Image 1 (tube, helix red, strand yellow):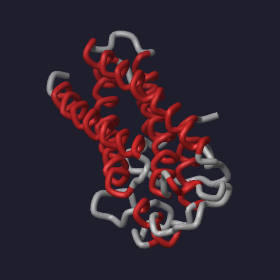
Image 2 (image 1 turned 90 degrees about the vertical axis):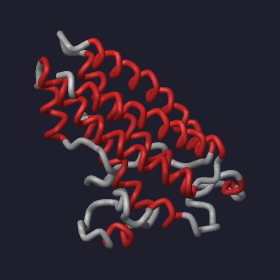
Image 3 (image 1 turned 180 degrees about the vertical axis):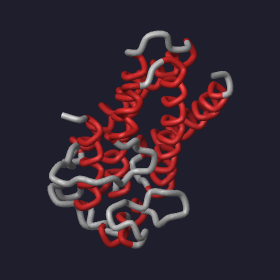
Amino acid sequence: MNTTIKTLSVAAALAASLGLAGCASTTGSGNSMPMDQGSSNPISSAMPSAIPSAGMTPGATADHNQADIMFAQMMIPHHAQAVEMSGIILAKPDMPAEVTALATKIKAAQAPEIEQMSRWLTGWNARTTMSGHSGHGMTGMVDDDGINKLKSATGTEAARLFLEQMISHHEGAINMAQQEISAGKFPDAVKLGRDIVEAQQAEIMQMKQLLTTL
């Protein structure tokens, strides 16, 4: 199964499950969630409900809220694509050592975070994956064409494409993490949001510098 299609399907299904279609329609796109900077905040939109989500046990909102759930459910496929992209570049021969080191670092950091967020969702009796819908919704996600280009690229072209795509991908993750910091309740999720912002801002600076050397 195409990993990118699957992860994008997860994101779109999440939007539908949390009743954010009305919020998404305000962007004018009709099929995208408003994750861009300056747009309405889907996590904030989910915040006011004091009623446990469907499938959650009574009192399950005591230590977390809908913002935490949305953060985890959306960040899991977002991280999964970063891991996929890193794996693609690591499988290519003759990559610059700095690019290989960065891809290794991203994969090593984000794969455990996926497992951590999955455990949170399981503990909250919330779904870790959702299917049945398609579309694009999260800022920074690379579309199928972009992933295919990365797979087929070689040498310096591949390294440059990876860095350019990952910069945009990181910017999307930072956007979501900042929303969690502002709206989240679960301390570990808020901490992860802060960690993502700190780590990925530094990696963006590193990637921009690497681009000047290629």
